[in-house]
Amino acid sequence: MGTAEHAYSKTDRPETEVPLGLQAFYERRQKDEWQATVTRLDALRQSFAEQRRQVFSPDLRDRIAQVARSGRRDDPRGPGLRYRSLVEARNTGLDLNALKRLHKRAYGEVGELVKGHEAFHRHETVVGSVADIFKQPPLVYVAPDPDKEKLFLPPFGGCWDRLEQNQATGDGAIVENSSHLDCAGRMGSRLIARNNSASDAEILCAYRENGYLVPFKTLRTGILQVKADLSALICRHHISTYDEFGWSDFHATTRGRLVLAVFWNWEDVEPANEVSDQWFASGLDCSGDGESFPGTSIQAVPGERRIINLFTEMAFPAGRKLWVYVGVADRIWTFLNDVSIDISIDSAWQLNSLAVRSI
Image (cartoon, rainbow, N blue to C red; front, side, top):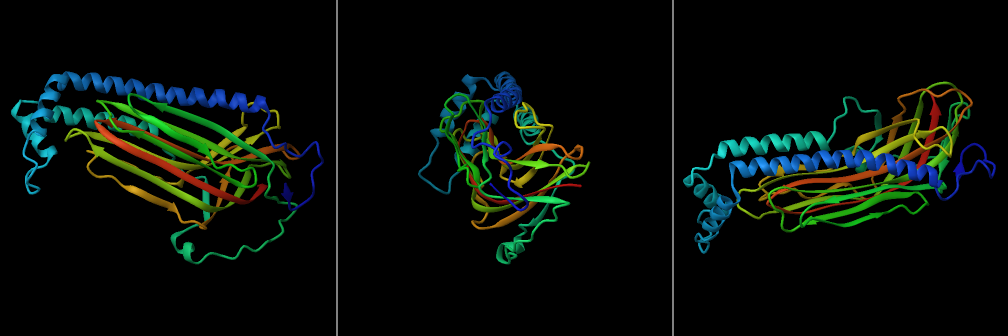
């Protein structure tokens, strides 16, 4: 580990592996939080499926699908599958307005569950605007004021592949959930999920978080400011869909967060404080009938530099040894109704430096 002030003693220097107690507790806590969200999402899925069957019985669904698919397809100028299925549904007397209200309410609840909200951003993007992509400032080393902050340079030592979670129903599958963490400054994840034959209501969820821990002794009583200097290696989000039925729908979202957590000591089992930049990689958020989709979105071009300031929500006393964690958390959520989907995140970032100060 490199610092801009002084070398830590052997007993102060972080090990290459995070203590088992810290890792185990964090996994238990996050799994509980994850499971609570997944349980609510699955309950919503089952409730939606049941209410949908009351409005739109499986027998009627199959009959409409069969009639719609048996229509003429040899004329590309003729009506498509979605139009033919809607016409047949109207001919059967199906209450399409009631069905639409049900779908709209369910997807609104899904959005509230998985996207989250943040009234204020606790960060400042110093570098990383669109203009900076083509005009980046030089990487000039400036020694920190020892009375104000400490600068950490790679390798950081305390690398932590913090959490992995997966959930899939029906024919859905989490194809890959792997880490880009190399314990030399690189962090990030590769998540791939697919469902090629979704039924009435299916979900896909994948999450991974990893990053680095560094030691810091507070210089004064106050909150902490952590400035993370990062360069993008790859940051690509993808969603593609296929309408299986003719008037299906879906909701899918991807998101990347930059996470700051502060621990009182190395053996802590719970962070003293944790905040995040929810829009570090804003990701994709889409819904519809499955006939259109965003495809691949480059969230940051390779080599793009970003400097993010994160601030704790609590103050720490002067002269206290802390452990500061900074990492990237990537996640995928989907709620499918007769829509096939291919959704993925490939996100790798180089952590160039961390600057920590008491303010």
